[in-house]
Length: 180
Image (cartoon, rainbow, N blue to C red; front, side, top):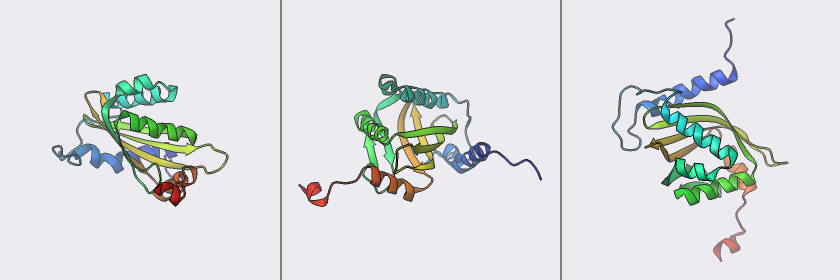
């Protein structure tokens, strides 16, 4: 029996094949489409931008994160929970990050690859709270312009688990309080 790939190798291959259409066909955001991936690489300069962001974020260096984010950054969180939605601008994105910190949310990056416009990140996202934990794979699609992150879209591997986790950790106020 041939050697089986490690989990990380399998995830890297899955991420490359699963998101290669995003790297090669850039018409999702109104840009010119191309038939083949263009300069997709794990060593692309845009990957360095995202690595720099993760490094600064991990150190709590919001001044550097602010330099990496475009002022009008858009961060999309899918789902049906209180943190879901489109967060526009650095203030809203930082407010979202503050909420993630309250849930002791952590991420272990498994794969980064990019081209002239996009970086794909696949990571294990989990919390280490006493209860109400989550531990699933996530993918982020970063759009990069002029060495800055202008857009990020999250893709959870299990949207139902993500919705349940965020709904438990960040419950909505009772209906009368929400309507007041």
